[in-house]
Image 1 (cartoon, rainbow, N blue to C red):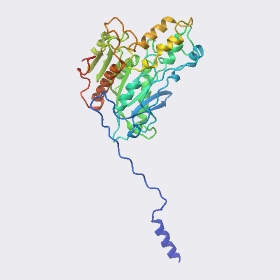
Image 2: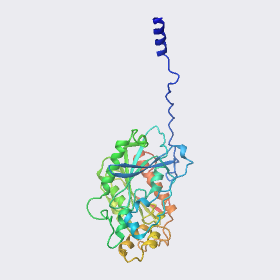
Image 3: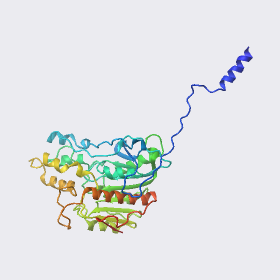
Image 4: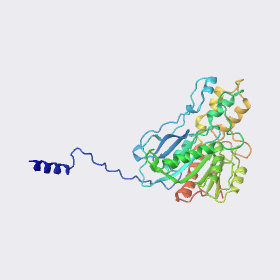
Length: 385
């Protein structure tokens, strides 16, 4: 009897339990088939917010095909308005930015990781200020990580529009000396390096921390040039609407508007002279803001409603900030010098030029595909090397 029980126990031990769960079959990888035109959208895009070392980043990434029909989420700007400003002018609502990116969408299942691009916003901006361009690049097979830059954000500038300034006024981004955005972007790069390839973050498996580029707008274009020239881990630099230069021995591109009074063609030509592998795209009748979505935020309308004519406002500083915020926007008259058309180039046209050439540049510099930036594609863009 004992021998029989022992044999039964051994036999049962060798049999699988009928209730034991089986390993799920992994889903096959998705492809990254992209249209040949770099200005055409690619795959669906997801968006998420990450924090690291006290910094906040917005992250756009290629998403699974399963979210292709999902509705995107508008990007509210209310979080970038400080309480001190609201207390002074009263409650109001900023126009949200439109976006087709799906919040927290499942990342695309790719057989290999993709390059990562760091983005730097301009003075008076914020991490989502160029959401349309960031989203386009993500649809074309990049992960884009945009950092906030305290010291030159919208929330830092708004309190400074009053005389005397309100609590929270911070113009460190305008002052001379070290660029406050550099540390923010280095933190973003460290986040990428620590997260890439791991399971701690849903986007980790998508990111190739060894293939990094950087781009920025206005003051952020200057940051991109500065950090891109110093950091050997950044392999390509794209500067938009910024005259800053660098001696970087790596691929670099400068995009500018011919009718941009804040970064005019002569200053961009000077920046091109210091590049060993550089290209400049001069966009006819474009101003300062087509490289961002700031025109859609209608900050000039907000200022007219809330600030213009108030006795406690610094009228001179407000006027300079409005000139910056509205340059290139619909309904605004271009400057007379340099000679411009009667109206700025429509944002749809300038946006397509910017998205096409930004994608083409990074495709060649980081992904090894395509011809890069070539002339003759657009009537309103001139390419110089």
